Amino acid sequence: MNGPEPTTPTTIERTLQRLRGGTPYKAALEALLLDLDEDTSEQLMLLHKESRAAWLPLLANARGRALFLGNAFSGTIPPIAFVGFHLTVVDHDPRRLAFSSFRDREYVPGRTSYIAAGLDARLPFASNSFDLVVLEQGPPNPATGWSFDMSELTRVARSEIVMCVDNRLGYKRSIGKRGIYHVPGPLEYVRGALRAPRGERTLRAYRRMFGPDFERPRAFALYPHARDFSHVVGLDAQRPRLTIGPRERKNKIKLAGKALGLFPVLAPSFALIARRRGGQAQQPRVERVLSALAERIGEERPELDILVATRSNDCLMLTAPHAAVDDPSRDEAGSAPGYWTLHVPLSPQKKRLVRIHHGFLARLRSDFPTVNVPEPLFEGELDGMWLTCERRLAGLTAPNMTGELGATRRTFLDAARDMASLVVREAQPCDAETFEAHVGRSFELVMRYVAVGSTRRALERMRDEARERLIGRSLPLVFYHADLRGKHVQVRRDGSVVGYLDWGASLECFLPYVDLLHLVAHQRKQEERCSSGATWKLVRDRGNLREHEREALEEYVRRVGLDTEVRATIEAIYPVLVAEMAERNWDYSRPRWMHRQFGL
Image 1: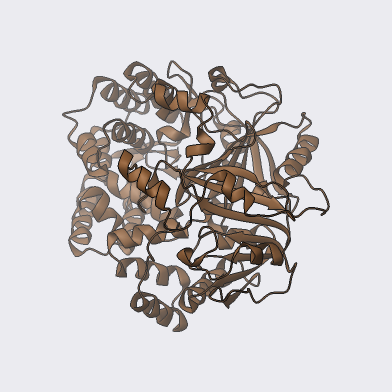
Image 2: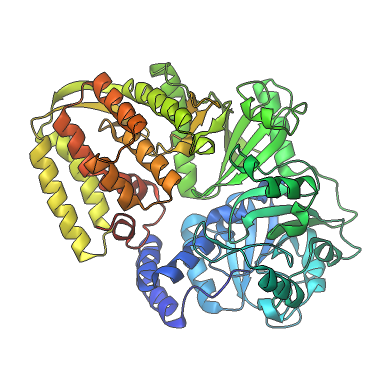
């Protein structure tokens, strides 16, 4: 299920030599990614994502001993330890285990151990050794790299087993690059369903594998595919549900398949969670957390509505009251009792960003009350799991309105007004100190990770030109969202803005205009499926801007009183400002990112 091995013995041995020589884990990982070709580094980064473990709150167990069987590179490993388990990692490759040990010493020190095993018919553990057993590489058989069978999993599991598997009848697969999936033609699909070379099974057949000692496993779709999924979707109940936006509702075939109950049959991947019979009955952890939150907040306990595995390694859980029904009008609900958003970070870096986000919500509501953001409700640990809770805003995220230019115009104009109100320092001449604090440092951070010589030289020229153009110019400073894309803007069906989400990357004081510019550029990128470089050229040259895009940008400039030269300079250095946000918040730098994204 994890696809081709995303390293070679040579590259991983070279990385281990760096780590043993004292190179910090982050730097060693970045060097490894640079050692690999682009496709292989993409595969490794997908495998390395901690959000692969977004199903964790659905377990009943919250602590105890856990066993992970799979590729030791997997990002699932740190979160299992991060949320409370003492974890044993089993892989048959000692090099991968050694690499994992360096990562986990930094991320979850003292909570993991490593054993090279899996090539024998019997696992080297006593019966009932583990409260949780996780198998991630598909069903146990030689085709997935294991010599033991399912009876060994059920033998060593004292309480729960999680098995992440591909569906024999799944209609698409991730190709190993983020957001790109292969949908086979009819003949290829039939051949794959008949042959199933890695032992893939149907959902019903997977359930039978657990035998009589375990309860019927709860099943969840990892959608779109286990290698690269954004939603964990309940297959035994209506929730957690798969979100279907207004644009997707136009796909009659997709809606008909869902209405006919075909989603559990054709979903590409599953997470199956099974409990041993006769154990102490326990609710899933998320249910216990929701009960505790309801008591603290003073509202009736809601239900888990949507579970999202975010690209930034957050388990995002949206709740709704029991009385809410699954119909399109529910998208307008929210901002009422029982509508909450829970953030469960799955890595130390994400926990830092979630804390920043939650703190800034209170700050924004106090200092900028005309800019609507979610109401913060709780921050802390419940049932041994650290999380935050905020009021869930009504409406839809702006990408649901992609292609509806009238609605997009309304969104952009509302955003221009709101972002222009976030001024924290009125305009004054930009001196050398101000330039270095907000521009020079951005270039310095981005250039630290540039691995292409021509890109570095282009950035040096860009920085020098920006200094010459900005020094002495009138420059206000603003509270900076830093990642204002459509998915962080909640809107009504007419495009009017309800509020703004995800302030974890924000800065209290930065350059003006960037947030709105990024929103406009990224929305155009979504609409036309074009490159970041193409959208940069669009906003820099301005000749092909649409009327509603130009109108919103001009409205911001008018409201803030922005100097024309300052605006043009910010448009010219836009790639650096996007990369600065990324490098400041990523847990590791992506290889040759500036060169690939912007063609610099």
